[in-house]
Length: 229
Image (tube, rainbow, N blue to C red; front, side):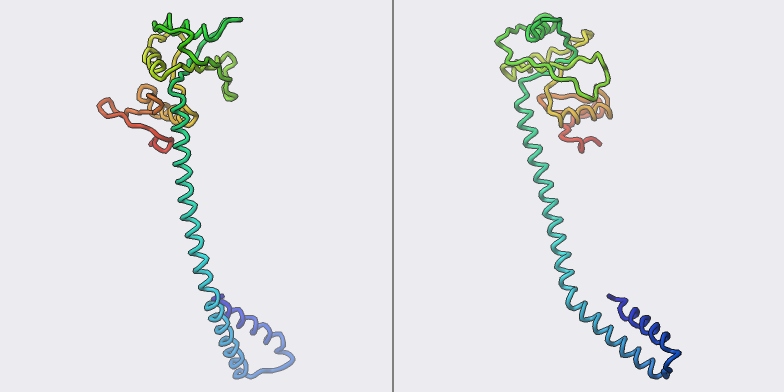
C-alpha cells in the first residue's frame, strides 16, 4: 500500500504518453493532474492504513497468543509423557531382562531361567518366585541371523528382582547378561549415553539412568535424551 501513489503516477504517465500523439497537454495541466492523483492516492493509502492497521495489530496479537498456547500445550504434553513413562517403569521394577539365554529343544523356558539363577547366580529360587517368563521377538533392525531374543522374567516382588540383579556379575563370561527391564524411552537414553560416554560411565538403577563423567564426580541422572550434552 505504501507504493500506491507511485504506482498511480506511473500508470498516469503511461496513459498520458499513449495519447500524446492525439492530444497535447500543457506541462501545467499534466502537473496539476499528477498532483491531484497523488493527493487522491495518498488519501486512499491513509484510509486503508486507518482501516486495516488495527486489524493487523489484532491479528499479530492473536498469533502471539496462539504461539504461547502451543508452547504451553507442548510443555503439558512433555509432563504427561514423563508421568506416563514413570508409571510404566514402576510396573517393570519387578522384572529383569536376560540376554543370551539359549533354550534346548522341547525345554521349559521357565526352568531354564530358574537353573541360571539358582546354579550360576547361586541364589535360592523356586517356580513360585516367578510370575512370568517371556521371550521377546527379535527387533527387525537386528542384522544378526543367530541373534538370541531376550527373555523378560517377572518376579513376584521388586526386592527379589533387585536381589537377582545384584548378582549379575556372576554371569560374566557365560554369554548371558542381565539388565533392568526399561521402557523404550529409557533404553534409548541408556544406549545413546553409553555410545557417548562409554559403558562403564553409564548404568541403570531402579529404572533410572545415571552417568558419571569423572571418577571423582557424583553420578548425574539422565531423564531424557535432552540431558545428554
